[in-house]
Image (cartoon, rainbow, N blue to C red; front, side, top):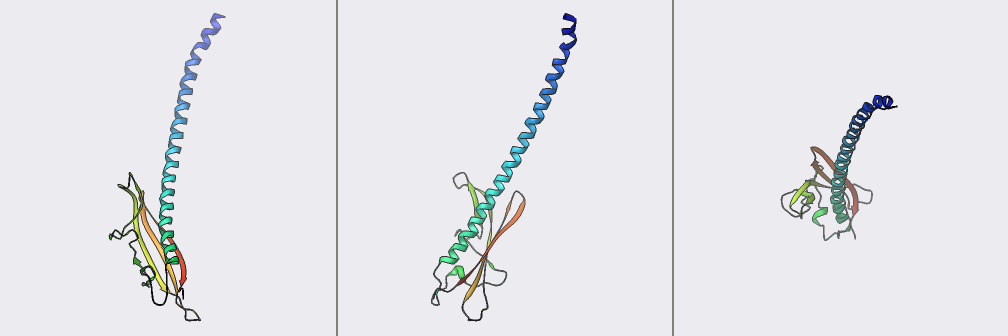
Amino acid sequence: MLRRLRSCAGILLIEAVVAAAALALVIVGASQALLIANRMAATSRILTAARSVVQRNIDTALTTTFTQASTPAILATTGANGSVWDDDGGADNIVQISVQDNNTAVVASGVLTRTVVALANADNAVVLQVTFSLTYTYRGRTDTVSMTTIRARDD
């Protein structure tokens, strides 16, 4: 009986080493998966913030008063290529998309372009096509978010 126990004694050490190696592989794989998931979540947060900036400007273009006597700056016609629109009022033509640390660290910023062109129509009414495009770079990748709407005069 004692002889049989001695022949199995070395197998426990090998099993422990194999189990430790397997556990290390699982931990490394899980850590990598969590890091990738965190990067994807951060990229999605920046994309959502960029969409919010563009949507806010589209909403402003749709809700501002636009009459024959008053054309707001946001609805002033531009060329086909548009013009840079200073959304945040910083006079630097850069829009801050996301900031951290009590508004001290800019995570992502971009350039917002506004394009307003008159659309021809049978009634000769003033109908404008308004497009806002925000181009930004995050984690070495350039992306653009763009939205378009149509606006007519209120009167």
